[in-house]
Image (cartoon, rainbow, N blue to C red; front, side, top):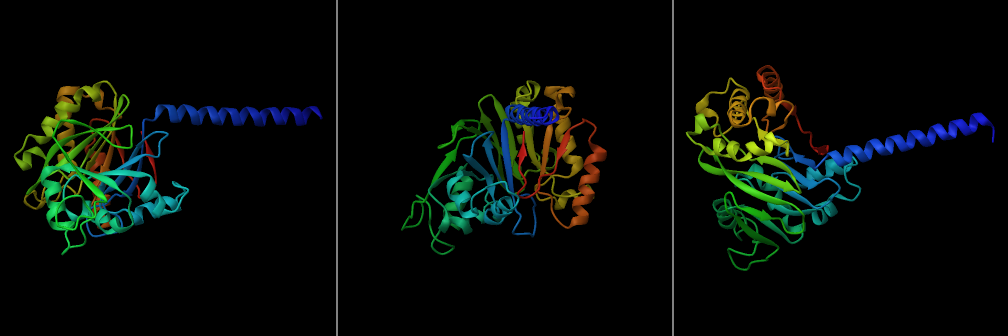
Length: 322
């Protein structure tokens, strides 16, 4: 073989090994992978709050909220995120649902897809489970696919009531989750702290700011996660911003604006110090259409981001890794 061909062959092998090493290193540094199935709040029923979360290297996911399932999974399949049909992803990869609260934009996908789903657990706080049991999985609203409630009970889903602050092992995964109550206007929402080995991910359902809700729920949450932020074990916070700053407080209905989010991040910085928040991944969820409002929210977040947070805007069907 001529010397120039040998040299080219060696360079190609070196390049392949280098790319493989970079991939392995990047994978080793990531603790979680997230597949957004729905990222918006509001009127688009094909793109409502739902996020598949799994440890890096695993296909055993939990679904944080379930406003949209099939349409989001199909978008992920189209993006080559998954290599099997959407119905098989639903049946085989999602091991359980964590529902933050009972509003339809966070649970409609679960209800609609229930006839084609497989047996799983539904994890939520007690009042959320009660609403699902008495208003959604009933024989007048749909069919009772759960293990409690109206007879006959089809027992596809098993309700798992979460105790605030208590650690729950997620069946058929290696993850653990703690639930924390949030204030969302007229009902209780939930934040889920997900643990995989020594790494953590925090997902918040809809929430208002403590100053508007006259609550200490977010302050209690920030104090609970502060040690994880300081030690860099918390890989990302997924939190909503629904309206631009011009939205009057009286019509927030338990949601955040850019100003209120940054006020809460400043509250988090009190027990952590500001340096600990620099480049912290903050995934902004539940932006409400129209497009002009979403663009305004993003501009305001950039302007008001004095802490140097790494703001991330998830896109339906496109995976994130942290």
